[in-house]
Structures are given as structure tokens and as C-alpha cells.
Length: 410
Image 1 (cartoon, rainbow, N blue to C red):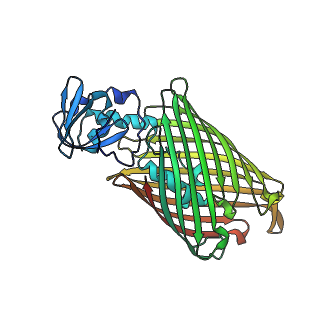
Image 2: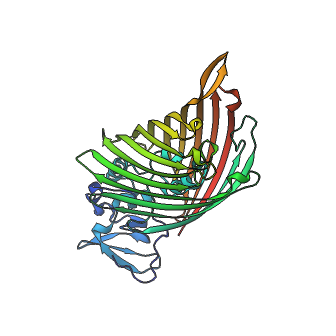
Image 3: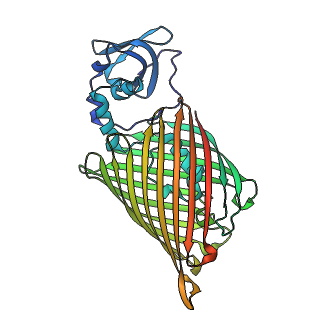
């Protein structure tokens, strides 16, 4: 599609994955209605007035008063209807299609925040539901942002040390959807600076790539690779991580899917090479999308950590549940709870006169609010409460974390 000189497209386009159901919708359902915007292949047009259809083309007037036309097949009927507040049966078709392709509200800001905000603090990306990279289809999207964090117990100690930090960030996102599947890639750099705890000051890098292919009927395959350099400070230690994973996704019903995941990760420590570890893991998660657009998920994951340092060997079991509510004005609210049970067979302590292995139980509750502002800005508010119970009383702690992120897409 070729646009006349002076025509501006939005700087940010969040691509919603669609299938043949979108193409089957009839653009004639929009004819004659006053429209403010027109969603087309690869863009968004600001128009003024009704849309007229003649000889397989749509005719409309731009905000500057110039008449323009384009082929009917380039109009995204469902997204145009939603953007203009039009209710018709095609909108219901669009909602079902989004459920099948597992898209989420405000995926752009989630993608950025999970690399630099509270999520990065504890390796959240591996346990949170997968988020799609937000970009124009087949193009790179550049973003910059800043996250502010406040923590009541930054070192996860029995006696908490409060601190606050700021994380400027920049990154690139890429997404390409084809008939056989989708490929995605992203890069994010975060520049972490805390006011008191110098050990957490660093520059982090995260590179992520995935390829999804459609198999027989309801089955899909997803292969992912990730490199994180000084990214997540899980268990209050910084490491460089290199990982690959394979996931198979089976659609049970129109709105429900189950996923089986297996992966392998290597963790390297500059300051303690004996702690270098191999971290195989596997898990299952189920998710369901309701008619309202809300999404619920539940997951279970088991992993082992093997290192030369015997004290770093452990097994961890994680159970989690997550609920996302779409809100008005391109916003979404996400609530989540995780329980982690971690056993260290080589860390022995004396309890009631007997030597037993150390065992921890960690609970994490989180709440996040994402909102897109106009087309090029997005904001996120995050809150997290974390507590750990242990048969070693010195290892127990609790802490609150609050974060705010502002993202600008270019």
C-alpha cells in the first residue's frame, strides 16, 4: 500500500496476531458510519467522516480534508470497529481470534518492563506467561524508558535494608508472523543505579529470540533462546545466564490451552566460579481466556541446580497462578501469586538436636498495572511482596518492592 506525501502513521503499532477469521470479516459493516480512525495493514490512519465502498475500494477523507482510497482487503475490520466504539458481530469474532493466538493487553510495555523492572529482579521472565514482542510486523521497533524502584529489603535479609534505584533502559523488538509460524527477537539494556547498595549497580543486557511453528491441528511448537548478562539477581546473586527451551502448546478448547516446557540453562558467576551451575527444568501450565477478555493461568515447574560448590546444589518446585483483567483505555491489571519450595541437600543445620537439610518456602504476591498512553508512550506500576520461611531462622525475611516504569516507543 502506498501512502501520499504528508500522511503520518502512528509511531507505535501493537500488532495483534490474527488468523483467517479476520480476513473473513466484511468491511461493508463499516460503510456509512462516522469513523475517527481506520486500522489498516501495518498502520493506523486518522480519518474524518464516513467510509464509502465502491468497486472493491474504500473511500474516506483524511483529517486534512484530502480524499483517499485503498483496497478493501487492507482494512482490519475488527480493530477499526473497536477503535471507533462500534459494536457488531465481527468484534466477537475478533475476541475469539485473539484468544486463540494468546495476545495480551499492553504487550509492548510488558516486554520492556520484564527486562528492567521488578520482574527482572527475580528472573520473572521464566515463570510469567509468555508475552508477545510488540512491534510493526516484520520491522524493528526501538524503545527507551526509565524505571524507578523502591525496596524495603533489597538484600533479602532478616533485618531489611531499604534502598531505591533508577534504571534507564533502551531496546529493540522484532516480530514477523507468517503462514507457517512466528519469529520474535528482542534486545534490552538496563543501566541499574542504587543509592546505597553498590553491589547491585551494573549494566545488564538481555537478548531473546523465539520461533513458533504450527504443527498438526491444535498443536504448536515454540523454541526459545535467551542470554542475560547481569540481568536477574535471583536469590540475591548476579550471574550471566545462557538458556534454551522447547515448548509444545496444545489447544484444548476454543479458549483454553495447555503447554509443556523443558529447558536447560547455564549460570556463570564472575566473582565465584565454583558457583557456576547447570540448571535443567521442566513444567506445565494451563491458561484460559474468558469472554470478557480476562485471562487466568496456573503453572507448575520443577528445576535442579548443579554446581561445583556443594552448597549451591538445590531442587526448586514452583507453583503459580496469574489473573489478568483488561481495563479501559488500553490498560490491563495483572495479579499473581507464586510459591517456591527450595531444598539444599548439602546445607545441613541442627534442628531439635538432629542434623537436617535446609529447606525454604518462599511466597511472592505481585500486582501490576499497564497502560498505553496515546500511541508512543506506555506506563507501568508494579508492587511485589515477598516472604521466605525456613528451618534456618536466620534465612527468613520479608520485603516490599514498588516500581514505576515509563516507556517511549520510536
